[in-house]
Image 1 (cartoon, protein in one colour):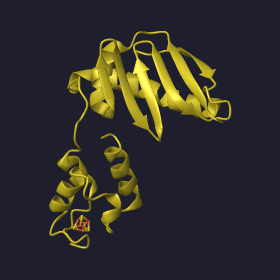
Image 2 (image 1 turned 180 degrees about the vertical axis):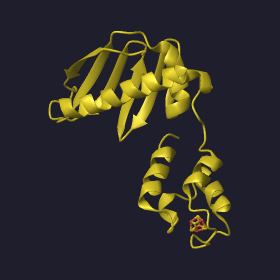
Image 3 (image 1 turned 90 degrees about the vertical axis):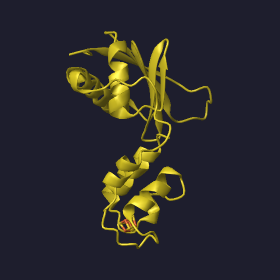
Image 4 (image 1 turned 120 degrees about the vertical axis):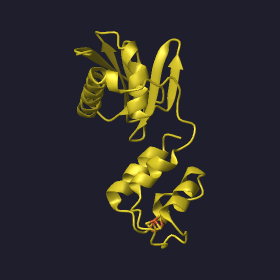
Length: 169
Ligand code: SF4
């Protein structure tokens, strides 16, 4: 197991009227070696090599993972912070365990991948979106000309997944 323990601390944002908190978890272990693998698995929003850090967009939050810290810009309370930190702890440990099967990535994706989009579409080529095929639709999504809401056949689950995927770019 790469990450075993952390200690969290909450900080008030500079704006006194803000209701949310910031949370920083101080890690007992140095996890910098897992960051490029985690970048592949979680598709980071920003990856910096020196000093190593990986920033992710996650449910409207910005979360930055450093060698010995995880910083979350917005949390409601301890319960929410614990939920996020435990999820990341699991992802970090799972990713590290599977690292031999993962190609590490030292950069961030510049553009959504057409295949990743196509995988989430119904692939029926029904033409209800006004396009001849799902592939053409997916291509337009990569260019930002179409979005999840433009495919009437897309179910809610995949609509959310596609939205979250596109938010990384
Ligand atoms: S409406 Fe959706 S399922 Fe139908 S062709 Fe367009 S992208 Fe494919």
